[in-house]
Amino acid sequence: MIDQEKIRYHIRGLLEALGENPDREGLLETPDRVARMMSEVFEGINYSNHEIAEKFGKTFSIQEAENTDSAVVMREIQVFSYCEHHMALMYDMYVNVAYLPAGKVLGLSKIARICDMAAKRLQLQERLGNDIAEIISEATGSLDVGVLITGSHSCMTARGIRNTSARTVTKTFKGRFRTDKNLQELVL
Image 1 (cartoon, rainbow, N blue to C red):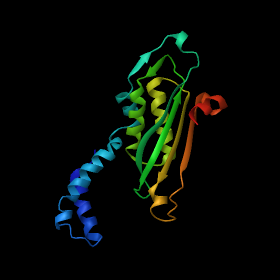
Image 2: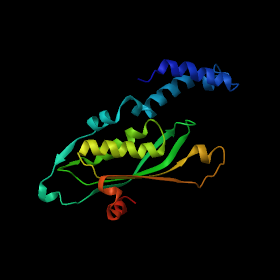
Image 3: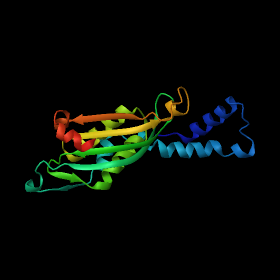
Image 4: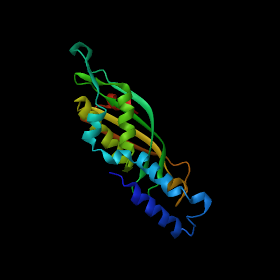
């Protein structure tokens, strides 16, 4: 679990290390604000992929006649995360998810909630795609899942090389999505 008291303590020390006075008016409440913010933006750390699948795994049964290789596709689910290397913001991130139902479908809002919760961790974009695919697969019972993520990383855009136009694209294909170009096209 996220320890807000430790966060407050360390943020105060960080402010001091930066040469700031944590007792000045504008910074007095900063350690508390940062602790609350971190509890919110890193909420996903509190859950395993399995627990996220259980939490947002509300599905609806479909009849065999309805389950004729028709994919469920959701595009441009906006999320943000923080890279685990620099704790830098990964932003303007959009996730496309597709899966072949295996007798049941997820409630549509649950797909977006799964993407959001998986992103609320210190992440690598590549791992985030795999986490989302794993959670969708467990929640739906489908082995056939595709995930595409595009995003900007402030560790590239705001520091270091400072290349503001660079976008990172990652693709995760499970099951039939690995070899079926038509299924891959649904995600792209």
